[in-house]
Image (cartoon, rainbow, N blue to C red):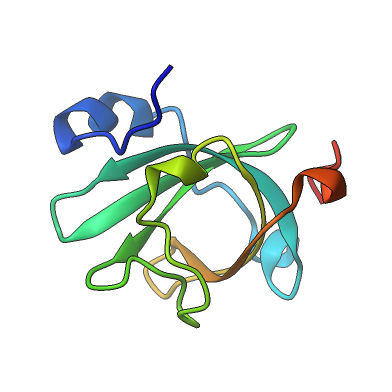
Length: 116
């Protein structure tokens, strides 16, 4: 299957199966390993990032112009990232969404099966 950033119309039905269902104590100050399943364009100059671990599916967004983490260390505007594993640091925003603070691409030889 060709890796591609999905259009808004295509990504919308998929978003429902990905939550933002972490509790604050599960993520804040912790690193989570997750696989990037899909990238999809949003309506507000945002790019949806849909991730999965062994037991959770979750979504977050990054925004124009860099489509990067809050610390600007990693940009997700590249369809070749789909299927790759990442170390993520997130927090819960004031409006209760997952806020992606930091991301690091995990090299093939460093990958594990553990989500945490």
